Image 1 (cartoon, helix red, strand yellow):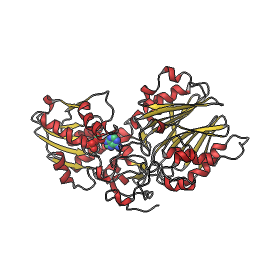
Image 2 (cartoon, protein in one colour):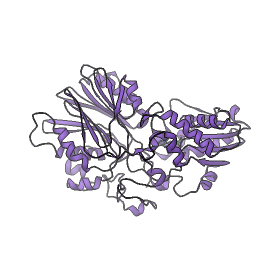
Image 3 (tube, protein in one colour):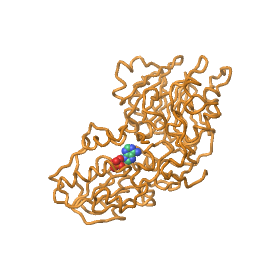
Image 4 (cartoon, protein in one colour):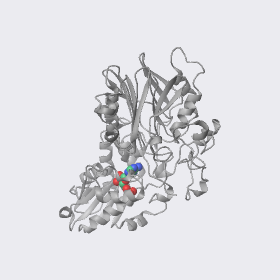
Length: 494
Ligand code: AMP
């Protein structure tokens, strides 16, 4: 069974009395569009009523002035989604809203939980029976979390209004896997990261209040300044009395290394390091590790640009453009079907024959996942007259599926899963191929080498992966692990 590829989502939150929080959330989501293009949504509270607007599509397709204007309030959360758990449909759009008695809350989730079956068991639910049994409006693990939270609400509303916080304190330690959450109730904005901090979440300050965002670049766009990362295992609560922090688990930071390689915007900082500069250093390292005589270093735009710049700088070989990217086409990789992805490559990239013809090219990209794009690009370059194509990848072979929030498909869909570098070279039709070594990649980030999840590159799953594939596990009976195409977890829980 082939599933749609997925992507870490984007989340945003703002607490700013007197400001148009819906417009700020809109801008924040727009800045985070690259993290999810399937659906977008905003929930706003005015202190009494929570209103959610969400739909399939890009942020600019879902929201216009007509839809934003009625979203009045002093706090808001927003979410861009690409499906990880659950199928691609309207009812899986986020934020998820859940009413509890006269109250309610909304939740936006970036990540994927690995213990959904255990959690749904605890609620007395069977996979595939969630909706009829409990009336959930969504099949995502995020809706399950909302359900768990609702179950932990105090029976009587608390006089201090901290019901959601209290419920979260009970639920969070039970969750496994990857999650950066933004939540709101009538009066509070809450941000949470899992104990490993697989996915980023930062706290920012604007004049009138506070902002939470998946990436620091989104803070820049709404005029907020970076305060700090929400820590792994931390819940921050923002309300009229200010900001407070609760640590529900000791932090063991393991940020997704692929945030540095590909996901994050280049103008984002991770672990206090510029992603753009890190990617350039990756290219420099690659030039030192795998040099080759050539006439021009060119990127696969846009993802390969900083690494190609670094490669050219370190090798002394001129940098040039060999492909033009249509600026209005999104990332082909996250189109929901294989067929669409195939068509997308030609829509997206077109060669510049005058720059390519007769040249020995070093072509640099950040990663090869399925190989679909790369193979077509190589064929286009050859057609356009390249004399030689030497492919250089600024990360190691992508061999293992991610279970914590980035759905690159099953193991069998990953080009490098069972092929050697020589076999991949032949499949792609290139003259030479090299991938950046893991230790060089980690060094290029400039961050602490221990503080990364590298499961997709090493198979080292820090949090045990589910016995059954969690993807769609809430919709249909789980498949046994044996069907995961030779998938074999190699590490135990820390
Ligand atoms: P392919 O040759 O089809 O594996 O596509 C490789 C391209 O996908 C590279 O340009 C990468 O920048 C990009 N890519 C890598 N990881 C992801 C991801 N998780 N989501 C979307 N695109 C990705």
